Image 1: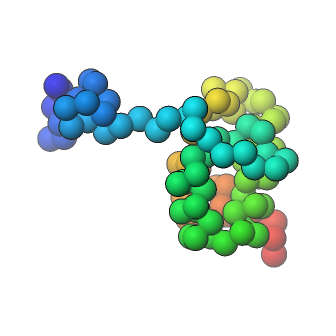
Image 2: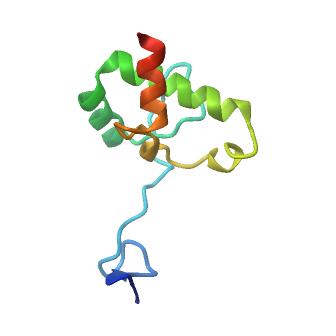
Length: 100
């Protein structure tokens, strides 16, 4: 165990009190969305938080960014994308702007 900035970090991730990793193998299938990975629980929580239309536009924004395959987006393909859907994040703000 390592202590950094007064926080206890466990190298076993999920064992002995560490934070469990999100299993990217358990993912939902969303029509027309191939690269964005979310678990069913994450998708349900985002649906409650933003509603169907805004979430759908945000999924397309993130999918388009991942499809472009730029220098920064390539390393995020195949990983869980839940963190991109913050209420003040660029994905949600772009979806709101495009929907207006």
